[in-house]
Structures are given as structure tokens and as C-alpha cells.
Length: 169
Image 1: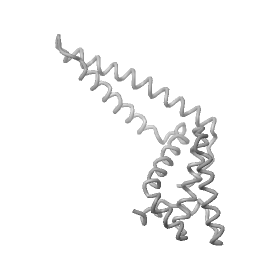
Image 2: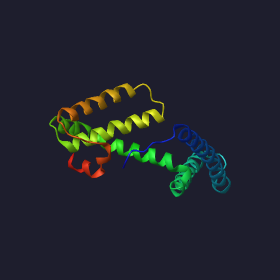
Image 3: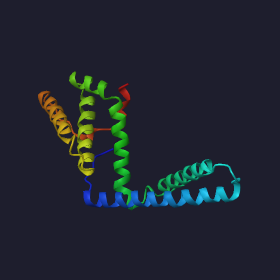
């Protein structure tokens, strides 16, 4: 996965539309499913909680199916890209201790992963207005760049590939 430039205002606008649409659709479907179950299966004097819960669960499944079916649409391009990028960041984070250890030993693949990881975090934090921890990310990114420069090697985020993660437990 390569890092791409994303128009922040367009991304935020589309993300807000998707979130609002998801909430409205989930609410309407949950109420509709629950009412259908209650009308068909409810018994007097018995709680309808299980039907309401089942309605919410089915609505959630329906919304997930809808999002899955339209995720490749042009409208979702930036949103889906950021979602996949966050998933990749989570995979890297789970192996981060071993990757950092290898980077200190000068292993180029570890340095490439860290370079990608911190630059991708910076991109996502800027898109999500996460100003609390971006200073730490920039500090970590500068440390990786210093390590790369001290080794007199040229590395870039374009060299990153998911397969590099396979060698780290």
C-alpha cells in the first residue's frame, strides 16, 4: 500500500455524510425490524427486549452489507483507503516492538516499515485532527530518519510492501 495525498475537506465531508447516513439507516432499520418481530411474535406480558435486540443486530448486519457492497464506489475512495491504512497500521503496531528492535540493529526492512508506519500515522492524524499525539509521531519519524541517515542509506515509503511484515512475529 502506498501513501497518497488526500483532500482533507473532501475526506471529512464525505466521512461525515457516511457516518450520518449510517446512523439514520441503522436507526430506521432497527426500528422496522424490531416492530416486525414484535407484531409477528410478541406475547402479552412478555418482554420485547429480545426482539428489539434482534432488530438492532439485523439492522447492523444490513448496514454492514450495504457498506461492503458500495465500498469501491468513487464516493468512498478516500474513506475506504484510510480505513485500509488504519488496518495496516494496526498490523504493524502489533509487531512494533520486534520491528523497532530490528531497526536499532540497522535492518533495512524494519527501517522501511517504521518510515511507512510513522508517515502513515502522520497522514491519518492530520486527516482526523488528532493534534494531541502528532508531536510524538513527528519525533519518532525524525528518529527513524536520523537512523537512516546515519547508516548512509536511501530509503523511502515507496519501498514498503505488506510482505515485509511477514518476517516479524
